[in-house]
Length: 162
Image 1 (tube, rainbow, N blue to C red):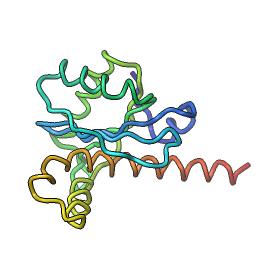
Image 2: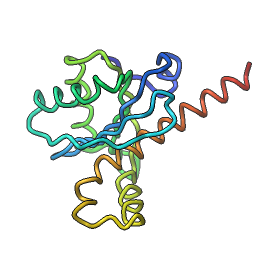
Image 3: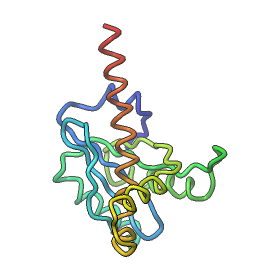
Image 4: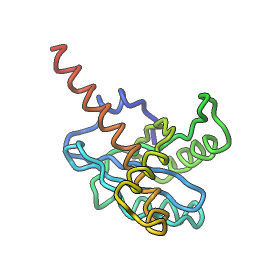
């Protein structure tokens, strides 16, 4: 397993492979998957956390049928740019996943992704109970959409340099 920057991923990811976005929580893993053209992030069902081995297998089972070529996982950086215990837990999760898969990971600054996801769900008039069920996958979609937008920007910049 490899940890890549988004720029490195842009140069390595084969066409017609999806990217999965992850929002790692203490109780759930929010999951989102891109289309094969890597334009849109679509939320999937959350994965309820049990223990690492079970969580990892559930995640890999979920993405196998989606033709996922990379993971973008939210890195919960503090607002001042420092990294706390949640960042350490995310990095440990990625390290441990390296023993289970060769799919590369991109660590993506996820500041305010959950806040943005909740705002959208409120604007859509989603009930409080349903928001609680959907917030992690919605946050994963915000994380993934940010990465997809960056990949598109890199592709445009590369095309205009030719």
